[in-house]
Image 1 (cartoon, helix red, strand yellow):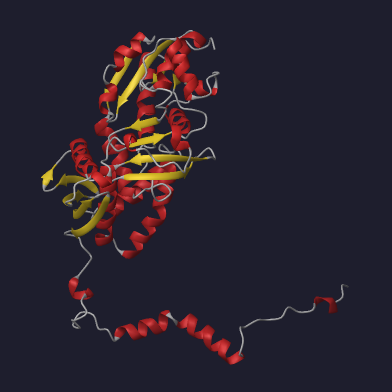
Image 2 (cartoon, rainbow, N blue to C red; image 1 turned 30 degrees about the vertical axis):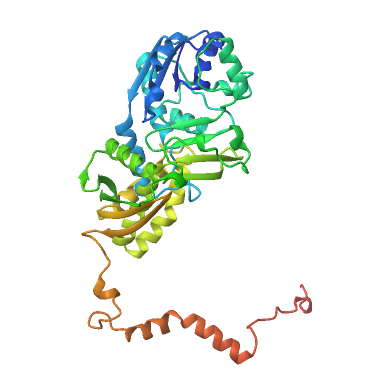
Length: 418
């Protein structure tokens, strides 16, 4: 442990990273620089620099990365339609690459020879951080205390923090692990580790209990340009204020809660409770707008690729050739994904009730049952005859034989070898 002189720690000020600073100094005898990325966690950043210095850091960087986070990580994933295991909107997953990338840049600027993170050895985040480190600068040493120290639980970490007089918000009674950013908040651990336990109402931070939500539905209109959200209810907005506004509107109506058991990359299942109010609305609106403007084959093929894109993001493979290649495809599909989608929010539900686009492929004169001058219904007979020809031939053969067609295998025992 003596070959490290300076390390940059991805620092959140939570339980795990709070105890890592003194642990690194005690065990590696190195200088520790803390780095906290503002990706929209709000008041969690209050007093962070002072806390990091008091617990042993020589310096603490706090940088506002919200705009690039939304524009270069959230929007590409939204445009791809990527949802992990059909439900998880990847809020924690795509936050890690931007944090780790900036962490490496700071390490290079500070002349550090190592980077460190507070991820456990059981989770996905260790992979997300370290794959980014490898992509950005594989020469940096990586320190993952949870894979080295004797601390084996959050209770142990709390005891260590108390012994070092480190202020923490976690308690033995409130043991949840949370991750918050502008897109979502996740809740894990504690009584949630039993998948039968219903989440307690005091757990939720971004969404109102649907039972307590307003009794009157609210209509929200989302405008897109080339697959990117650009306005709410007729008002044009930049990325960060748009998400903040929509989080408040959707959260008020209890929209965006999910409770899932997911498959972690490391092989185990885990139970997570997520709140993604704005993301839920945007994902539904974007998907609906695509159904209006994309041709059938492109839409269906894109739907096939979306789970793979989600898997890449979930598994920390953001800076990979395959994701870049998929982005090129997605970029091409989004050129006409412009227009507006109208949604109704009511007691935890989000329903699309209208959509329009100047590039709509829906034409009323083709879909109507009453007009014959554009689409001749008699043409359908020939189409069906050709489309159903394989079925017709098979059925005729079966009728002729009186049974399903089968061919007996020759009796090879009759043939002798020379």
